[in-house]
Amino acid sequence: FIIPAGYCGGAFWGGVFVVLSGDRVAATVAAGVFCAGMVVSLFFAPNRVMVGLTLGFVVLTVGFILMDWLVVTPFLQFLTLFYGVFIGSFSMYDIYDDLITRTVEGSDAHACHQLFPCCMPRCVGVQFALVALAFQAGGLYLALVWMTST
Image (tube, rainbow, N blue to C red; front, side):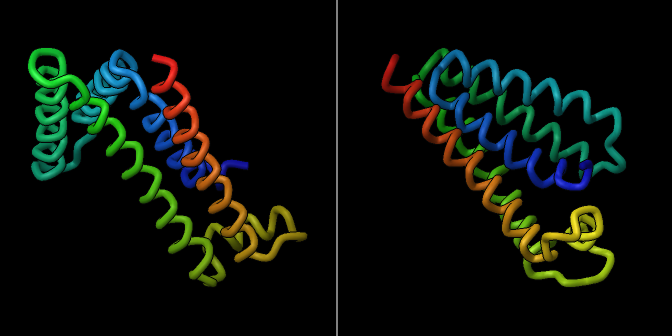
């Protein structure tokens, strides 16, 4: 049951960011948690390029937080929506690339097929893709419901 955690987990967190983009305070909390996670990841950064990218995203996100609360109102919500859509779409691409198109014996789809022999490896990939798509669609629906209520 650990095999789909990366694929479905990425899609889940993409959907969560999409949901949190529906409200200004929620987008601020999401951006703050994102920045805190990036700062924690600095302790595990293997090289200078990773440190530079991480600090760049932290500075960009903090800049968006300040601009949203001091200058322009929906700016941070758009950034949070971008993060959610980007994470979700990359998760979908990863599922497509690793589980649907790849038929190598050692792939994750084959490992799931060995655990559950009733599903062929490509069928496992399609199932994960449908779950990832459902997370994104659910996130979009909940964000729109949240936006219309405020």
